[in-house]
Image (cartoon, rainbow, N blue to C red; front, side, top):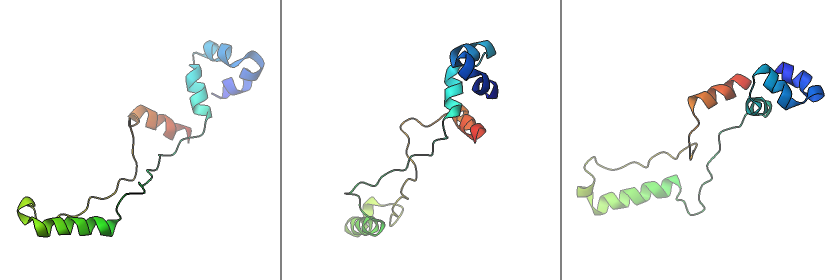
Length: 98
């Protein structure tokens, strides 16, 4: 990587990467800053923790037979969301560049 960074501006990135056997995509991917995990925005219509607990308690009071495990607790809100989770290899590359 350091060699491509030093020689690349004089000879060109593509020929330097080809001579070293380094894919250009790898060179450019490692140059950019590491991405942080995306944060999930709450929907403006989403209920708060207290309102969610109230709804579950009301549903339990109305139909306790539907809740075999007893009074349900609201599930914790997710902290990160992925459409396609990163592979272990991609996470290792990000950790390697930091």
